[in-house]
Image 1 (cartoon, protein in one colour):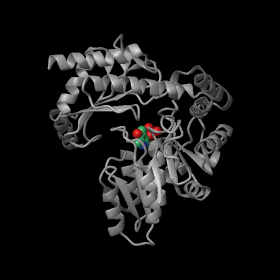
Image 2 (tube, protein in one colour; image 1 turned 180 degrees about the vertical axis):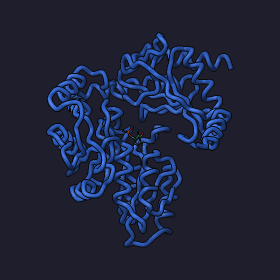
Image 3 (cartoon, rainbow, N blue to C red; image 1 turned 30 degrees about the horizontal axis):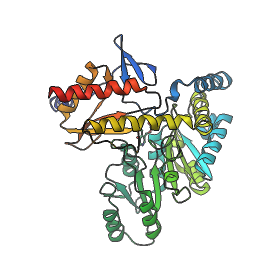
Image 4 (tube, helix red, strand yellow; image 1 turned 45 degrees about the vertical axis):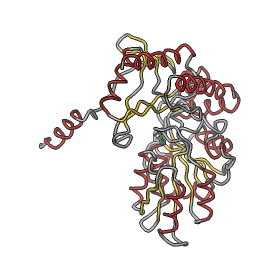
Length: 386
Ligand SMILES: *Cc1c(COP(=O)(O)O)cnc(C)c1O
């Protein structure tokens, strides 16, 4: 067996400081982890509402597990659909004010499975330059023509909508609702205007918006455009504290996906505990608005404190990118933060473009003011040393 190609690639990654490995953490709480016996503040998780450790969510997972078993035993269309699935899909649709919601095994699979099913060889996809990898992979799998527009640049998008294709061609505009690595919000008002003008479908990936912006209902609700976005994708894995993805849409697209989406059809359904947990989490967000209030209090607090020490920070979403440019520098900063008891991962290419390596801080509803102060103090000491 010739492994030279792989060894060389790994070597190059090491040299360029892009080599990656998994670190084993013990997630003690939504805001703390234990690593080699020492406790750290976790500032790199997407567990925005801290629901992974909420007693009601844990109880619901246990109840689902005891009622329906450890695994679902088959795909959704064969024998994997149990009552919790039906209830969750109904509640997600009600929450998103859409006709239907369809659960996939992950957000990744929901993106890949939706885009590749809806779009084909002669179709056009207009995709934001900073869209998530799972959108990009879905576009590639579809074999459609992919036209990338500059990040959130509506003039560039319109120019491209005008110059590519014709009126009758099947078109899809696809964007992150909240961009995963930058934390900015897509200009959905303008996207809706353009999709109507150019007779296109609009799909929004709300992985970081669900349970976060628009009172938790996502980016379409944030803009009061709930009924104008054709396909809203969400994940159960971030703010909802479980695992899974979903697509909220009309009945035609939902039925079409059930009948054609290969990741939906050919994979065993999620385990009952996952669905039970997601359902309890959704019910919590709907009934207890203080969860999202707490998240935004923390977002505002951290944003203010970071601004006061001269870092660019907004308070629109819980994602704080601190762009440092160089991959090695990003790694070094994350090491220094770790010495100060804080976990912040260095985000490097290919997750972000070359030269845009960064620290990506995420704040959750579970962080205490004391923990956030510890983070800011660590940055202050870094600045004083350099
Ligand atoms: C995390 C993420 C996904 C994938 O969701 P998973 O449930 O983790 O597979 C899709 N899109 C965006 C923008 C994401 O950040």
